[in-house]
Image (tube, rainbow, N blue to C red):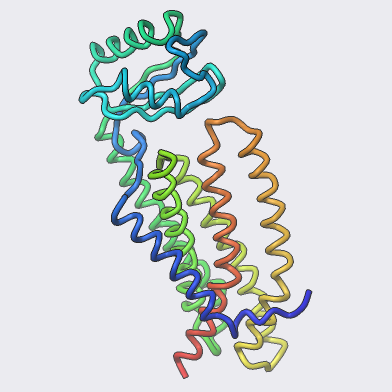
Length: 306
């Protein structure tokens, strides 16, 4: 593969990332997230249908959502979130209600949609549990970030020239924040357009992306460390060379992973589609940041020091 001048064009990569991060931040600030009951608390009802009245398209989650919001929902339930699990099996999420209201909703469904509808499962998550889960999520992510900084600083402790070992950790974390921010912004926008929710699986996808991205970054950092021992090239030239020596591996690995994820997204079950979509975004963004952000930041540190 031809040698790619990544470091010389670092301002372009920073600009691209800056634009994507700015869009993400603006979307999160002005539109927020479509948050699942995993974090807010609420009711979860799973129903298997046998037939439909009123000409409802059994295969369309959007048609079901529209019907439920117009005919079943009220001030008590709030807006319904509808997820198709199978062609005749649906999951409904809405605000927490008491048992009397739960039975009223079930009666409406049988009266207006399908008299033979079978409730497979019903449960509710209290707001206290949702808030506790949210707090644990924040703690987990912060703990992961702290451990990554400590690990990289320790692993590269013998590399102090021309960039201190702790700067490797900081650069890697900046790249990871970049990844998480763009993933969050993408799901904020998708929540507005397609009513996609942020749930516990999205947090799992974020943590998976952090691991995937940092692995890619460490491989390149390790090559930089080895090249520092072998050559006397200027640091920017050495970093560019190190990236090029690993870029094929990074792209091929990501491409293979994306093939699997895309196969699951298009041919797998509906219940994991949003999770897989988050992973797809994470793999693309994580691969980009490990090549075009994390390593160029080391050169920027060094240039600024001078």
